[in-house]
Length: 260
Image (cartoon, rainbow, N blue to C red; front, side):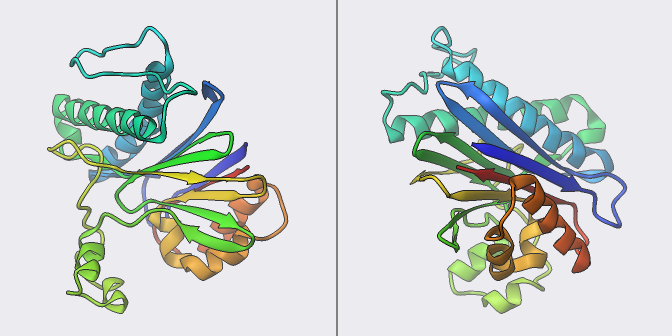
C-alpha cells in the first residue's frame, strides 16, 4: 500500500479540527489509515480528532499481539490473525472502536473545558486482497476501481436518516438546519455501533478517506474525476484540497489516499 494524507484548516477556523494517520506496519502484514473530524468547542474538536487517530492504531496493535487476550474490562481481545474469519475481524475492530470511544469520553470528563467533545471516524484496514472499512459520523470512505467511484459508507447524520426514511428529499438535506447533527460518533454517552464492512480489493484500486470538508464541496462526480487522474497519492491528495479551496470550501478539509 502507498498512502498519503493532507489536511488544511478551514478559512474561518482558528484551529484545524481534523486529523489523520497512516500506519504502514500495524502487524500481521496489515496497514491502517484513519481520518477523524472533531466536534466540541474551540479546543475540544482538535483534541478529540487527534486523540482518535493516535489511540485507535495503538488499540488495534495491542489487539494483534499474542499476549493481549483480555483487556481491563474483561472483553475478549482476540488476535486479528491470518486464520481469523471476516466476522471475527470485524468484531475485533468494532470492539477497539468502542474502547477508544470510552477513552475519549473519559478524557473529556476529566477536563471541563473539553466537555461534550466527540469525533467522527473513517478507517481502512488493508491486508492482501482484503480491506476492512469502519466508520462513524459523516467522514467517508470511497473505493475507485476502473474509474468507477464506489461509496463504502453512509453518513450517520440526522438528515441522512430522514432521507432514508422518506421524510426529507436529498435536495433539501444540504440546507437543513440539522445537517451537521451526528447520530453516531466517538465519545457519545452510549457505546457507538460502528458500521464495519469487508470489501475485496485488487492491484490498481484506490481508496479515499475524507472528512465532510472534502466530500460536501466536491461531490461524488468531481471526486471520481480527480481520483482517476494520473499521479501519486501525494499529488492527488493535494489536488483534492486545492479544488476545495477553489470552490471556497468553508470547513477544515482532510483527505487520505491509499493505492493498492
